[in-house]
Image (cartoon, rainbow, N blue to C red; front, side, top):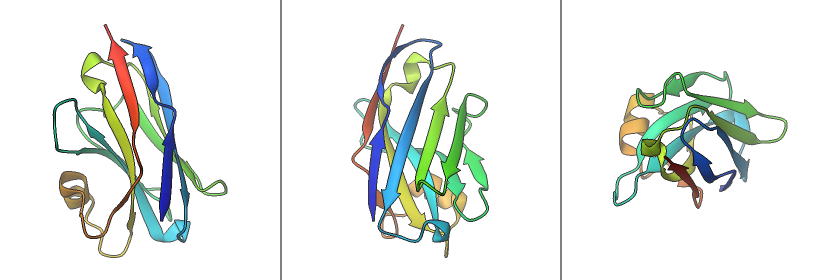
Length: 130
């Protein structure tokens, strides 16, 4: 499994960014892709959104619901996270992660990251300035 994030950068409060996660090395439809973020100074990763690549079901965490939209282009094996109305508190390193759909509990995955079943990208930095 290989995941490559892109699209991070510096943006002002209220601005927008779209992150991309290019995936390879697995059967796309058999997996879910999630976006997690690690806030400055924190060792924990917060699960914020996920999409099931077979049925395109989605999940959004409370902190980003209504502002972020996750989508996938299965023909390109790419998942996107469109981020609007960005806030200073959205500043973080954003990681995409892949997990097989088999045995997936969305809430558990978003909370714990399912370390034994999840593959991670290298992360992309998003900085929101006031």
